[in-house]
Image 1 (tube, rainbow, N blue to C red):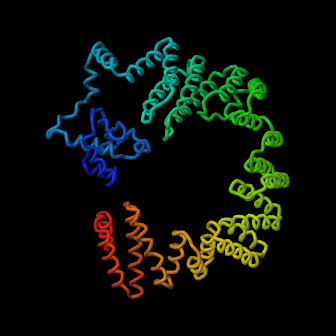
Image 2 (spheres, rainbow, N blue to C red):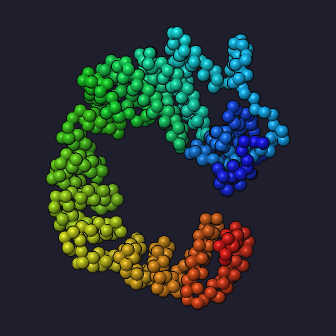
Image 3 (cartoon, one colour):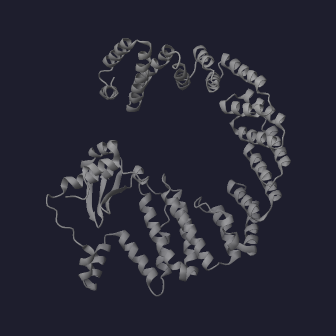
Length: 538
């Protein structure tokens, strides 16, 4: 018997992936045994490598597909498992203790076996090369250098990220083995590896961050080697500037991580490198480096001055105000935000974060009237539920909400009459949140509102007026069915279940039953829909 069953595959994958895996059974090729399980290729939109493992008697699976790389037991794992179960002989041979057998062979036989396999197995040959280069009495930096430089690529095709990451990891493992004893040899190799792997992270889709994670590991190894054998501080400072400005985007290297390694000579070289570059470029990287340098070496005033050199939008004023706030300088923070508010000159999503922080600071300073004035202007210009709640909470603190509430509702009704974007929905939801169900019902009856708002109001209206709610729910059933997918069919069934309860409450069950029969007849070709309705007892 196999160490897993179809039931195990279904439990791990779920019904949907299991059923989909059935359709890939014929697409499984290149099945091979491994000490802890099997591996195979499954061909679909691309070719993926799936592996099943016996972990303490339990089944586990991995796959190179996007879903599998997220840790899921995917349809490709299911297909591989089904192929194994299909092709397994009725009386499988007893598993061989391979390690025990290998221990019986003499050294020459083992060498021949490994060397023969390495002729056609690039990954094994690389491991042998790296092992030879690092485990011999005198490490071979030239071999290691060749392996590092092979990490340089122009592009990584989709699906090949894992293979690249495995290759790069093998190289880093080898370099890591030398760090305790030969850090001075490893450091220049790790710098090259950082450049190549970082560039590779931008030369692929890498949706799961596999290559980025390897680039970050390379950076950690480099830091470890530098802490064991500190490099020349000035040279390190110059290299870091060049790496930041002209190197890859990955890994993200923070100056704070290396301030202790740089010391005064390294920071001086770093500053000089920035100054020499400043006249040549003014891109985001250079500005980011200057900000990091000032943050690491200067105080709040120096960093504020650096940020103030280029104010491109509200977020820059917010950053400055946040620094000043953290330094306990609230009045100055308010001044910067007010300056940013004047500079922006308009209300939109870009400025809301600035306004929200300014409101907080006004309240911290006891200037509640200023906070209310800002929130009133923000709400009047762009009414929204969040702003309404902010305004109400601020007004309630000073006992002024009753008057302002009438003003806020008047603004919303005027905008609803003018058919302003989402004004009616905002009014209905605010009334609903305040418990005024009748007023929110009148809004959705009078104005055009989106489906979610109408349903939210209908949910509450149904508590006292089930017949009114029926008129809202029933058209949504038809809309859901028209989308013709399983999810929308399930939603239609849920709505019909709600309608059944409402009809029962007003004694019109026969009308509901006739409606469902008519609906099923009109959609009799939609077998998935009919099956879902049957599951709900409809």
